[in-house]
Structure formats: structure tokens, C-alpha cells
Length: 603
Image (cartoon, rainbow, N blue to C red; front, side, top):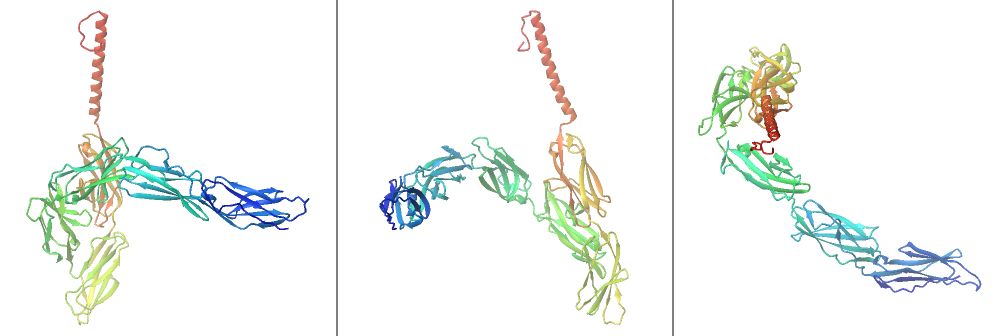
């Protein structure tokens, strides 16, 4: 048997015309013999169509032909358990069928900043695969493109967010059809135009403060915006990424404060709604009311029992309220409310000292001055010893030729021996592990001199415990009547005495109360509260361990006093009584048929 195939085929076809594929088989057989032929048509090695016939030829028609029909075709014939394949035939379809323009889903002529425009581009007469190109053109002629590949459908959808500066947007799409023999690109769709409206205007940032702001002046910064319609916007004022004040659902926000040099800088107002964010900035310059105070000591290094004097002053000598403070703790221990301070120095007076100056409510602090008080030949290099810390001791002989051997004793127990080869000190460390254990230290110095070893005086060290587990409460709790009193109670569960208690109102630097007492709790009464006293309060506690514990925040609300509520109720009752009497009087007049003028209208 012999089979042949032929195709009535033009090599190129215009898009939209028809393609007819003819497969012919030539089989040698007797005249009376009938045979079944199975014809299979393939495109790009994928089965396209099959049919069975006793005829020696069959046709397969593609109408209309589209670019996606371009490819490599062949036919295979099966007859009498034998198979034969035709040669490959390349078919090209030129051009693309005109397709629908890009269109907006849920189309609106106007859209708001921050919303999303959804575009759908389709080419209904073609077959996938496609690559769709979506183009967004902004008012400034800047364009943004998005590509999407579609393997199964003849359409694709994308989303374009509407940015802050978008006003008039134009959209367009182009489709590219692909096949194994090449690709074809459609003509661009017609433009779709969308108008963008602002949900709110660009914010305006203004200052109600004086033109020349000086420390102590009032700063009032206001940020406003205009809403197109009521929106749940968020508007805030910030400085150096720190939010100073904010509000939601309003068209303005205000930040107020008493000016200090820390208020110098750039302030930003930001309005946000969903994806939309708009900002405005302004710079505030605050002139210094007075210079930082200067603390001058008589000596920074002195022997024990020597006189130590500290003087505090301001350049230009303005009148100020001075105070001298010793640290630690962090907030310091007030030594004297004066510009000068004098004591007979002891070893435990070693520490950092500052002075504070106050003018018109503005408080400034000097640079710290470190004072070190030395004992005879052994001294501590740190302040109070805290449980768990390492004690640092220095031993030095003022006379003697090196090398000198220094030996440290705790009681009668030898701790360590260090040899020093120059005129400096030996440094010893001993860890504090027991609470309230009195430790007696001394050191001995010796060299090759024939004299006996020299011993220092004895130093007693007391280990102290830092404050722990602070709690803060009030009586009454939460709500206080206008003009009433409130008792604040600050308690620590443990800590060596004395303990320094300080009570603050949130966002205020100056403490409301301070006391250093030999107790683990303190009670303070704040009298005659007003609406301005409402807010959040907290307590801090510290001792010589240099650890400051801060309590939880306690919210205090100031409500109307009982007599104020009673007065309002009485006023309402009087109004009701007068109205009732008036109606009764009118009714009596009508009953008597009296037509004289009635005092109460509506009778």
C-alpha cells in the first residue's frame, strides 16, 4: 500500500479570512475492497481535529482565522493498522482583528485620591496567549506601565493607585498576541480619561506665637486642612519624627507648650487618609532667655575632712533661683536652695554635682562637676555599693621607693597582693554578694626598706539594696470632685533607706512633690483640684544604689462637685415648677371665661 498527502493551502492568510486544510491519502487496493481511514490534524504537535471516513480525503476548516491560528500543521492517517504522516506545513496569519478599547470597571468620571482605578483590556476575537500592556499617563505627562500575561482568557485586569499629585489621568492598553511563528501587536486602544478630586487640601501650618520667640513664651502651632466632605482623616503635628499632638475626624490640631531652646527645629504637619498623605513644614527659632548656669568648685580632688565649696552663677548675672544637687540618683538629691554650698568633705561625698537655675519657669542645669574625696591611703572609686556590684578600691602610699607591694585585707583575710613599679596606685576588686554586710577593708604597703610594713586605716563598706517593685495609687481612686483633695501613695517593696520619692504629672519636667525619708512608702495630699489637674501621674523612687524605679501611670479625672450637680438639678426643678404653674393659671382663666390678656403665651 502507498499513501500520499497534499494540501490546498496559501502560505499566508489575512486575519479574519478562512483556512481550509485538506488531507488526501492514496492507498493501493482492489476495486471492491472498502477501507476505513482515520484522519488526525495536528497544530504545533497538539491534536486539533480527528475524523473517520471511507473516503480517501477530508477537510478541516478554520473560520475566521486569527493570529493565534498561526503555527506548524500536519496530518496523520491511520488505515489497516498502518500510520503515515504528512510533511510539516507552516501557516502564518497576518495582522490582528480590531478589539475593544480599555475600559474602567465601575467607571466614574471622578475618583478620589487614594482610591484604585481598575482597568480591563480585552481582544474578543483572538485566542490566548496574550501579553497586555496597560499605560497610565499623569497630568505632568509622566507615564506608568504595567504588563500582564494571560494564557487562558482573552482579557486581563490591573489596578492603578491614584497618587497625591494626580489630577487628570489617561489610560490606554495594547495587546500582543504570540505564537510559535512570531508575534503581532495590536493598535493602541482609545484613551480613557479620569478626573481626580482631592479628599482634603494641602495642610496649612501656622504659629500664633510672637514673631520673636524667647524661652518662657507660649508656643501655639496650628495645623488645618479643608475637607471636600466629612472624612475620618488623621491629622498630626510632629517634630523630628516624634508626634506632639494628633486627632482623628477633625480638620485641625494644635500643639501648645512653654518655649525652651529644645523647641528649636522643624515642625511638620501631616494629614493622612488611607493611602493619601500630605505634609507641610515650618521652622521655629527660640531665643535663649538665659545661658546655662556654671558650677565652679573650690577643688575637684581633695583629701578627706578638707573644706569643699561650690558656687553657681550665670553669665550676665541675671536674677535666678539657684539650687545645688548631688547625683546619683538620676534626678539628684537637693543639697541647698542657694547659689553656694560648703561642707567638710568626706569620702562618701565623692560624686557628680550640678546646679540648677530657674527664671520665669524655665529650668536649666549646669554641666556636671565630678568631685573625688580621698582617704589616707585607701579609697573607693565608686559611690554606694549596690548588691551584686564589684567594689573598686585603690591603695597608694604617698611615700616610698618602687617597687611597692600592696596587700588588701577584708577583716583578717588576705584578698590579693599587687606589685606596683611606679608612683601610682594598686587597684583591687571585690564583689558584693551579701545584703547589709558590714565589710572592713585595709591595705598594707611594703618595699625593700628595712622598716616594717605600713598599714592604712580601716574602711567600712555597707552593701545597700536598690529599690524594687514600685506601686502608685490614690484615694479616692480615678475620680475627684472639682475642688476636692486627693491622696497619692507611693510604695516600694524593698530597698535600703533612705528612699527618695518624687511625684510627677505626665509631660511636666518639674516634680510636684519630693521627699527623702527613712520609710518604704510616702503619702502626699494634693488639695483643691481643678479641671487643669486632670491627667496622668506617676511616682519615681531611688536610693543610694543609683537605680531609679518608675511606677505605673495613674489617671485622675476631675468631675463636677455634688453641690454643682445639686444646683443644676434645683434650677431644672424651678423651671418645671414655673411652667406648670403657668399652665394651671391659664386653664383656670379659661374656665371662668375671662378674656383678659394672659401672661404666658400658648394658653
